[in-house]
Image (tube, rainbow, N blue to C red; front, side):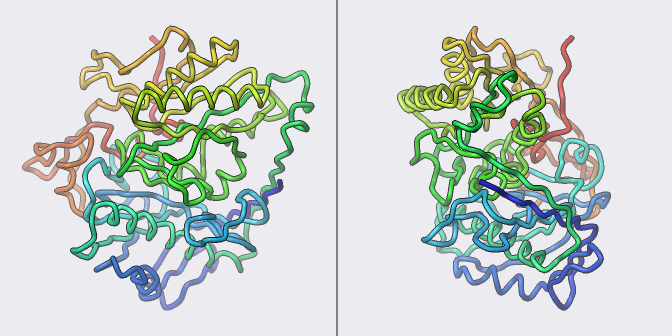
Length: 427
């Protein structure tokens, strides 16, 4: 399996008469974008805006963030739009770096967070450093909550694909090539290096808590062996609206920080054997079944060490711990990545579940820590939604326009794949 990733650096985004990339500037025609999105008759209204780093702009509530990508031949985000699908992770893919599609508008329930383009919140989010193409969607009145979530999710992916295709004719790009060999070949490679695998936990718990693998709702699949090239090529799409700080957006999937580091160290410090995608389920029976299947797949890979990333908080910590426990009991050294919910003062129990076998934990910080955000010049979306956001409440909006929120409420602030600026120290 071979994938070539052609990266086009976007330095500015402006609205214009046509869709094109010229001198690293992305030009977008609003009318064509609107026509594309309103092909879905469930969408009543759609508008577009641009938010740039350093501007006094707050985007709220954010549903998803997606990096624009397209295949030279084939279908990016395979399985989402077409009945016939191709395997992701092969061929040539174009990625527009430095920008992202952000979806907002009235939300289904709660837990959608904010992105600030300037000020203290910007220091907690990778998205504040991107030029964000913001799509504000209003659904038709008859659309129920499940369809509402689907409508906004598909609109974001559709727009990211459409904008990505603008780059297919661009010659000014940086190329990176990746090769992924069979398990047998990989096992024989680098005999002196430790064999390491990645358990990729993904939210799979129903409305507002779903992930899509080749367009298939992950709660209907069992733990599966996948390749990093599939992930980089859009095989996983976020449908998850869990706590904004720990949420894995589609952008995070496409740019998974754990995968990036494992590929960087492959052949130098370790032998990266593969990935097990593990759906995070609701019942204890399902958790134990998926744990058993995940560990079986890890052993089939011949892994001596494992990294597990979490998604969400609370209930999913049990999945994290039982897999860690089972792997350690099989003699497979395991490192887990999780955040802490230690209360505003940091004195509460950090994790809702734990096992003695969890000996190596990477913390992405305390999500309950609070921060006062300044009033901004422009809101894209609806500020009142902070009252329904995890990390916010009815008292978040101050009389002088400032905003008091927990770190929870900032999109990606303590991302559990480690793609974050927040860190922790041992004292």
